[in-house]
Image (cartoon, rainbow, N blue to C red; front, top):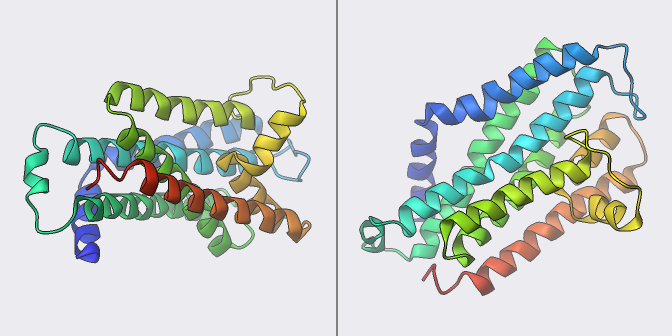
Length: 245
C-alpha cells in the first residue's frame, strides 16, 4: 500500500511543471549567471573554481527549498477542507504522510541529479564521485522534508508553519554564507555549521570527496545528516502522532 501511494504521489508531482521550473531551471539560471560572473580565475580555499563553488552551493540549497513541496501537499491533502476524501481511504493517514515525504525526496533527488549531470557535462564541474554527491543530496533532502513535515504537522496555523519553513531556509543559508552576509567568527556558529546545518554538512561531504581531502570530515558530515534524519523521524513520531492518526 505504501509503495502504491508513493507511486501516485510522485506521479502527481511530476505533472507539476512549475516545480521543474522552480527546482531546475531557476537554480541553473542562478548558477549560470553567477558562475560566469565570478569566472574560472577565482579559486576558493578548497581549490574550487567560481562555477564549482556556485553550483555545489545552489544545488544543495535548493534541496531545502524542496521541503515546501511536502508542506504544501500535506496541508492540501490532510489539513484542508477536502481532507475528508483522504481520511476515507482504506489505510492510515500516516501512511499517506510517509508516502508524500518519500515522493518529495525522490522528486528532489531527480531534480538534483539532473542539475549535477548538467553542470558536469556543460560547465565541467568536478563533482568527484557523482554517486556520492547524489547520496549526499538525498540525505540533505530527507532532513529538509522532515523539518517541513514537523512544522506543518505540529503547528496548527499554516501561516506560522510556513514562516518557520522560511526561517529554517534563510537562517541556515545565512549561517552558511550563501547570502554573502558577514557572519561573526564565534564558536557557536562554527558548531552549528559543523554538526547541524544541512547545507554546510552536505557541502563538506561533497567537497572533501571531490578534492580528496581527509575522509574523517567527509564521513562526519554524512554521519551527522543521517543522525539528524533519525532524530527528526523520532520527533515526528512523538509530536505528530495525534494529527496523523
